[in-house]
Image (cartoon, rainbow, N blue to C red; front, side, top):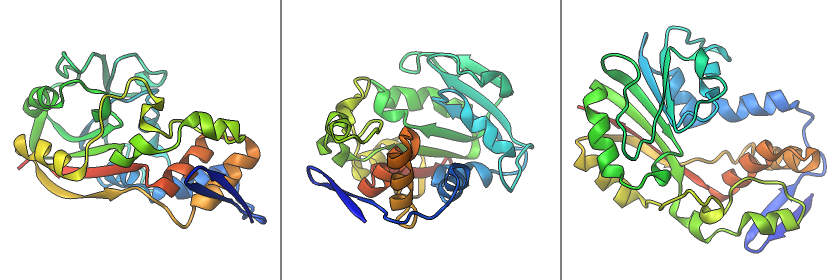
Length: 243
């Protein structure tokens, strides 16, 4: 096993990585991820809002792996139109710092906010605009960088050591505004009447070395990043419910 050190981060490259295909690693990774579990366990026929949908890749999860969830009605919103937005039931291009969610009619049963909150200038105003679009009992999945990412080594240091990785230090992304520790995040959501269900750090200790090894040896930034983020418990999540 080769050990790589990036300041205080120790990364292991396995001498004999398991001979899994990239597709197998991705499936193993996502099937244990809280974001995947949230979407796949939404109520039958749920109307789901994907906030900060990016390219729109999450819509492909409806039919990827069991359980198939073609019953879900999914809507996307982001600052720019993603390449897969036409596969949603509806979509909207909006600046969520100032605009309400207008896509879809009626209320949403579930909302996914993955790496959105850290980009907002006024999170209280955002939730105030979102609340009228939530059905009673609606659940919201929130994922964002943990507070300690602000002191992680920079992406530049990883690249200097031949490790092709995405954002590592919180401020590698110039559009990031602020981090939230758990008490701050809970207080924010409770102010808007949400009930906290569960949450925690996102980490897969079983797969992280293999993900990193595959990504490092194949120059695959996506899998390298998943391995590094897992090692660092880089992301945190929270699931809340509207009473």
